[in-house]
Structures are given as C-alpha cells and as structure tokens.
Amino acid sequence: MSTISKINAKVLVVDDEPFHRIVTSRMLNRRYSEVLVAENGEEAIQKVCNQFFHKVFMDLNMPVKDGWEATKEIHEKYPFLPIFAYSSDCPEKNDSSPEAEEFRQRLKENGFSGGIKKPLETDKFLQFCSEIESLSPTENSTAN
Image (cartoon, rainbow, N blue to C red; front, side, top):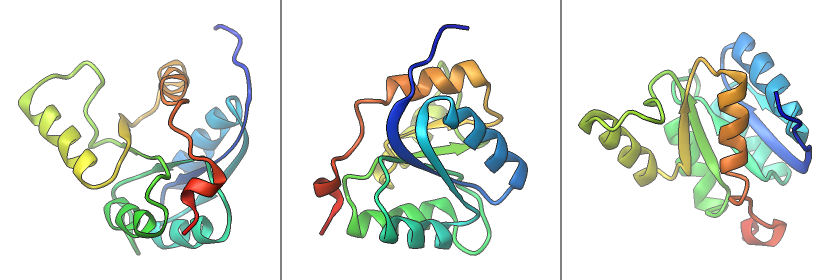
C-alpha cells in the first residue's frame, strides 16, 4: 500500500452499528487527524452544532433519526458542510445502471456530496477520501 499523508481535519462518522463505527473510524484515522463518532442522526446534529467538522460520513438507515433527515437538518444551518453517504444502499462507483444513477441523483437532491458502498474496503475507501479532499469547508463558510 502507498504511503498516506495525514490531513489536519476533523471528521464525523455516523452509524448505528458499533462495528461499522469502529472500522470506519480506524480507517479514517489513517487519513485525518481527528475522527469523532455518533450513533444516530440526532446525535450527529448535536455534534455538528457544537463543533466544527470538515466532513461527515453518514449512514443512511439508522434508528432515532436516519441519515436522510439528519443531513437535511444539518444543511439548514451548515449548507456548505460536505456530507457523504456510506451505506449498503449506495451503488458501486463503476455502476452506471439507471437505478444507480437515480440513487446518486437522490443523494445529490438530498444534500449529500457523494456516497460510497458498505462494506468498506480500506484501499477503496482511502482512495475515495483522496478524491473528495477538495470538498472541505472553511470554518467561516459553515457558520450562520
């Protein structure tokens, strides 16, 4: 595996499954200087309202508040915060079927900056993180 340079950025992982939170945060710790976790959309909203994040990785299907609703509420206050869906519902990157394109469009229409399919493979996920690196807000761009 190639050397990964660590980026000074704080990211949030939102997932109701403890296993996925642990695995995803460990992968992201290889790339980002600070990784925090939340176990549902409601907790994610609270964390985003109380501290600055450069990116959010959001599961779509969670109890309490799902990723769709949480993203909508977060973007009401912080419209420039990049939020990426990571879910088994997301299509593979090379899937160009009408269904996959429709799902990607739905993500975009609902405020997501992109998505990646679970289960995550380390190399693919870190490559995804490299590809999205230019999508980080400044602290002032997310404040109301």
